[in-house]
Length: 341
Image (cartoon, rainbow, N blue to C red):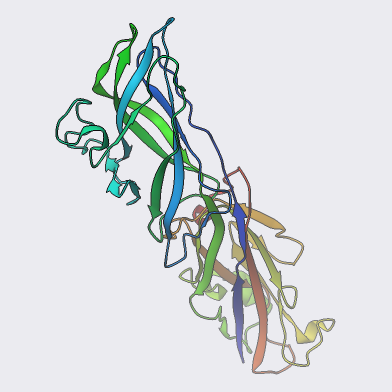
């Protein structure tokens, strides 16, 4: 008589938004920036289309000095860290985002004759005279996030501003490209989602009809399933795990009675560092994000027999079903590193 377990996994989807204004101050000629995506925009890292052609208004605020000192013109580009996803940001049809350290000659001189006030590949803005507004008009950026980017749910996209500027009224110009760290934070509602599947075979104990309980308990390793069986998870955020057994971690056959010890065989499951012997012994675990690529999402599951089949009611189909439910959560905490348990 063969004994086996069959597993099913589940997944859910939730959404989370994060908005954080860019903040920076300077005593010299300079700017601060803020770009906020519309609240209705969402990004699903498991979608095949990504987030394409979203208009995000960038608002610049110029620095003023004592009395008449003010920032007059500014030229800037956006930069992303080395190894960051291939975000695309355009302004007036020209790409204005670069990998840090690879901007070429940009931003160029504000008086350059090779493009003037609207030089391709950078953003230029003239704030005007003494009595003009310190806040720029909306500089509409077109932002594209490619599919399958490993964004964490709840985190904005942070970009640096690299700028030069001219000062007037006693405020010095800044002609060496100057970085404003995290000068732009683009609010993207990243879907807190997961994908999960069971990778492996049935947790099969083999033929145990003639094996008594004493033999099983004397050699538990011989009656433990392979460690190669696992649940594989991909997630953009933390997630919760619950485990339930149809027969409360006992094997039985079709028509068998769970109240009759002669018709059940006890076992335990090892999952997330816990020996599970009943439906009340596991509870709920919160795991850290596994990543869109699933690097942190391999969760091995094993089962160990606690009783032998000798003396039990004869049947060739003792079995149980374990259901593992995985649900994304909206939480600031990262949870446990479950793949390490």
